[in-house]
Length: 88
Image 1 (spheres, rainbow, N blue to C red):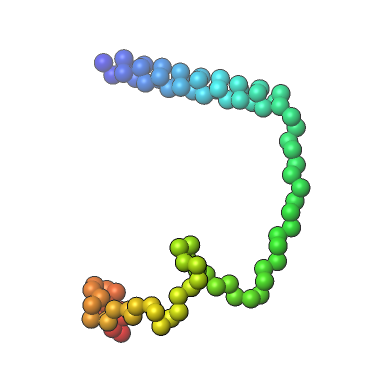
Image 2: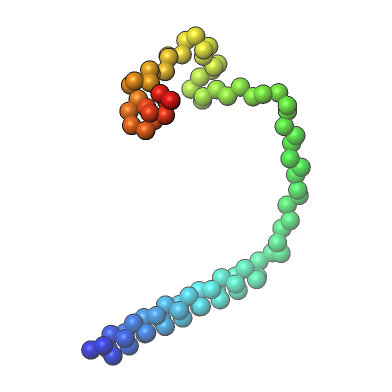
């Protein structure tokens, strides 16, 4: 029984390897007939401005002022390790 199952496993592995090799050869033949590699012109990266960028979420048109933002939770309302760290 073990010999039969070993034979089946080896046969399936061999077929899979053969199929892989055949498909690999077909891919290299189709690529060889195509045009030579096309070199794209290199673009130089644009220099970043030194002015700080104000990040605004996509759903805002302008950033809200700090006075309109809600306050954070008091440390007592945080639970677990985060609450302990905040209280320190």
